[in-house]
Amino acid sequence: MKKMCIRFFLITIVLSYFSCSPEDGNNGMDGTDGTDGTDVDGITTLIISGDITDEEVSQIITEDLGTNTREIIVANTVNLTSLDLSQISTVPKIEISNNIKLENLVLTNLESISEEIIIDNNDLLTTINLENLSTAKTLDIRDNKVLNSINLSRLGEVERVAVSRNETLENLSFPMLENVTSTFFVGNHNALVEIDAANLESVGSLSIQRNIRLASIDFPSLINTSNIRIADNDMIQRISFANLERVGVDTANSIAISEDLLEELNFSKLTSFSSMNIDSTVLLTSVTLSSIQDFDRLFLDSRPGKLSTAVIDQVLSDLVNATPAITGSEISLSGTASAQALTDAETLRTSGNTVTITD
View 1: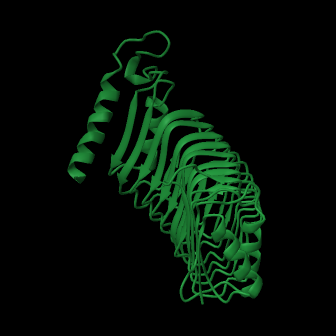
View 2: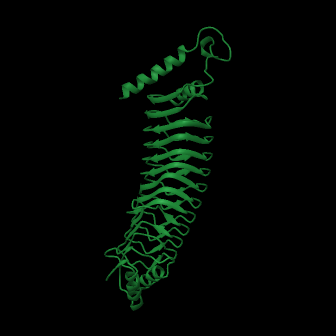
View 3: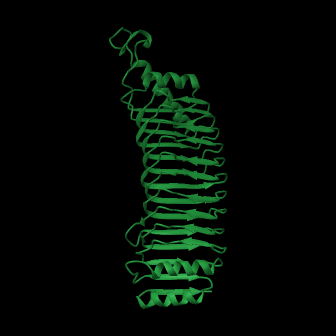
């Protein structure tokens, strides 16, 4: 594989060299010794790999990067330590992968990505600065062992976000992000303690899994989504979606939360969903579902965890007092019910619901 990469690099250099004729030309298209021989519009696909130095990469970028460039791939390099792509403001695709010595990456002027940006398996890369990136189709950052900082301060809209397996990353912030049309996934981090997406209003599917130090999840501005999956974040105690109003409209759309230490859950404005399944191994002391109106299944029957008696009282009271009346739904709760809760459960059964309370 290395021989193939080196061969491709040599071919790239040869093609760049012989693209210039030995005679002077106009607009830098041909020139003696290549001095004026740079194609100002750039090549369509720029690939850099193999045994290449920082200086050689800098020269290639100067000569071959331009407005015609649609794809930049920097992969499988063995000596590259610094990559400066600051001259780029927009390009369809960037992939920076498997560069074992890459420490410094400059993308500070990048504003938009119409296809994807992938940054993965760069073992020595500590910082990714995308401070001017405002729109992207796919953002994929994964398997960077010592990455501790990602700057996405202007990202406002993206189709897909995937940030995973960055072992030393502690904080992940999307301060301007409002819309994710497809998937938002954050997972498999050992050090992550905070996810900040305070302005996110809409997301196709939300998945947060296996971040072992994450203690709370809060999406205060999220209004609608199709799916929520939160699981195996070992320290999660509190989850809040205070402004979430609806989760999909059919049986494929659901909320599934499985967290061992979960104690507090806030869906105070949630009106409609298909299925909600909450699983915890400790006592749930706060569950807010005060706006609930339309759903098929509500399962708050985790084992060995249970709902406190006060939570059961509140949940059943909210369901009984919902307008219009809830009918044809399946409700399952785990914990000790009060006399009032048993009365409310019977009222719901009379309306055509299936209600199960297990102690």
